[in-house]
Length: 492
Image 1: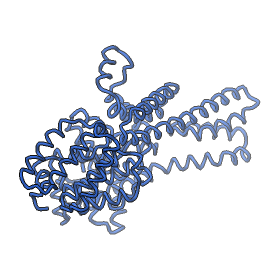
Image 2 (image 1 turned 45 degrees about the horizontal axis):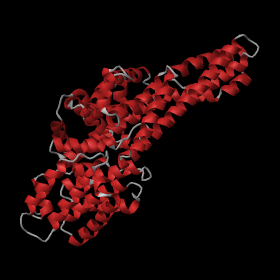
Image 3 (image 1 turned 135 degrees about the horizontal axis):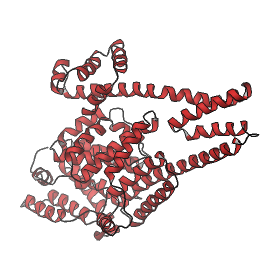
Image 4 (image 1 turned 180 degrees about the vertical axis):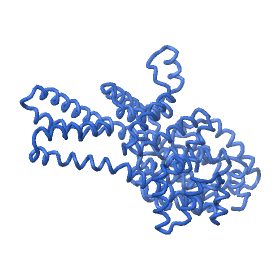
């Protein structure tokens, strides 16, 4: 909410009036009132809800729609001059053939300056190509040839960097599921490759793309002990992450008309959240959590080439557990993801999203709904390539069968999990083995000391650290509620 209020207060008077008039004309009176309240009043959320006579869910929907309306308006304002520029570039050949040479050159030089301001390197190659040909009999021919070659090389380099970045996060999803050292080495190599490529170009765009990967890599892949040793020995010292964030903010402010940077701002808000969460600076993390949470659909749907967006859902779940609000997620998700369309072909992010929805349902006591999510997931996609992830999902499903005391379905699934554990070897999945043992103990026919036995297994379970990034069974809080549910001592 804080982010939306900040945006509303930062609107120019002209933009504010345009948006408010648009809302009033379309009979969106409540949205118009919310906009005015955020702009002109210092009312709390609860006061605004009372004045509008809406409940929490309706208020959340209302502010989400207002946020989307403002973003659409700002994006339209931002893209108008850019679209005009692209039209001018498209008409270059027509101009060269129909205008006098001197007029064409003056127009192209003005266009060059405007394109440099927007950092449109692809379009600049068209301009320099035209200038080069117009100066074929002039000493400036060499200069424009060099500029043309430079921007063609830069354009190809940026394309390569974008491909490396997208490939990195695709491979990260695989590593999150497998925990394989070979996959981790592949990530290290891609990280080094993008660093080497970006060193060749002193430009902001390669730096922004490299920063997406570098910050994420340092938070989730690099061994912190080795980094500390390298720092002491002054080996491969890296720039502090907060300094990188500061530089990125400066770049985004300077190129505020750049549509890619406009959308990538959400990615860096997410990285700031993960950074401050990683180092336990929860006050700052809260600020960025609110910002990212308001645009979570955009992050999940459109940021997969620049980061691993479903990591946010894991952070959101952990945060809910810390604030004791995990039981509220299920209903919130219905609104947040009402028209969300996940990419089923992006298996790691898709599985992470469905598992998050299932665990949210579990914490709300909606065990049948959680089982439905997980069953549909297992029917929709094959996880045989990722045996550990397959076991994790199966164990979560088995937990739901335990909670609803469906002995037949549980026994069938437990036997399937045990067969898979034998094939993989118990030593490769000790935490899953103990998790299943808890469930079997709770579902056993013996009635004595069930809760005590489950509690003893939990003690052993918590002493094991999972080497996998994707380990959703670890987000199941093993408290008194869990013990009673597993042991059949608590009503659903």
